[in-house]
Image (cartoon, rainbow, N blue to C red; front, side, top):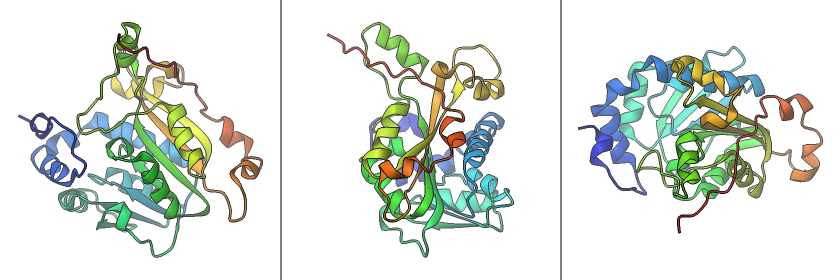
Length: 269
């Protein structure tokens, strides 16, 4: 029985869950298929922004941190996670001279200086308050910097099929509080003072092709995506969100701007 099998209901504080998972189910983290998706996430992010300093919120096993640190323009990656065992595993398996990891909760974390990029990979869906999570990320980001969120696509093919039969979407994991569409991710950012720059759809489902190809296939079949990413800009001091949109490079607004079908789900009678 896996740790996920033992935890059937949502927990507001999940640090014990992740401590158990990263310790007892560690072999599941060492997956070539997962590594391919993690590299894809970082590569697409770094095509859009080139930060010198990065904060990774909820760093988990640490793969993303070490991968981001490989880029020559990155000077430092600070990574936090409130799961002590996750930090311990990350240090043991994905150490890097540019990466500094700390056991910390984002709400209590005080950066020495604001970061060029604040990013989270598969974290926001676990939080009780997504808006507060985005505001806390914004707090740690410098004016003119970027915030990026990668998460599960609520309207992935499985849930589209449920919607066609009048059924509610299912959560992918009982530890998820809420899952999102790309439009909802962008709305959360805009509500909290961020400017959406780029949307990413990836990890296709239902094509019957190897997973390493399915990661990229959403460039052609965005409606099959199981994962989403949203990259936002934090306006410079003194600029409103509206006035900042005009200074966003057109290439950043258009590149990879794949539309994900966000039709409202039909409610069961």
